[in-house]
Image (tube, rainbow, N blue to C red):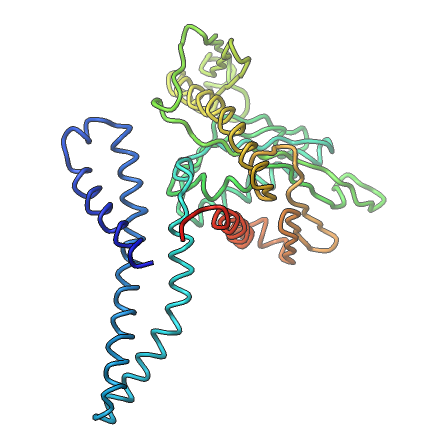
Length: 357
């Protein structure tokens, strides 16, 4: 392991030098990639330093014990040896997972699209619950969220809501949320107390940079229309909302959140770019999932991934068979425990097929 970590240290030193070179700074795509690599390597180098320190401590303690002349030093050496031996296996596991090659998309910001599925008004209310859950989760992580477009349900919630999330390693965290979410509860409109099942679909698209996807604007039809929903005097009076249609693929993106037509154009273009990027990424993820028979792949959008059972107060993630009996906590954004387990399963699968060791 130490030999492998020495390569990491050498590469870290190379990248540290590269990111301050003027020609690299001038190349935006390369600079962004190297900056991300620098952050990943920095965390690994810190673990390497701890590993070197522990192995040195073990060697030093063994020398003192072999000598055995000073009783007080021997006692201290025993404590040092016990501490180092207890920490070392745990540290080795941490390093193994960190050495797994990361998906370059994991560091990207995302567009999250939540759509009400089967269940009418109740599905729209559930889509609203999911939107609140994710915005709370993002708030707790210190990430920024911004609504791009929405279509409100007739009794509340959303028929559809699209929002962007920016922060650190956003896609790598939220990509496991993509799929069909199902709710089982008694709707407010139900007079006989019967439990109904409704669903909403969540899509998580990595936000594509301009250098990831080139869009020829000659292939894009732009329509302007009046915004709807809350917004004061500008609503239904100014054509500030923007709809973009990518003619070759038929993909449509729109934004009506901003009062400025120019800002709405920028946001709609960002959504369109992300959808085109995600189309290609989804093909790759599907191939990867088939290759490793992964149960936690984010490639299958139609897979039922989680059920929120209100009568039992239980949230079940079907991919890993995990039950959490904390409905209020989960809907208030406490979903990290699911994500941690899903990341662990995905990393374990990658570790089995990689040649890290």
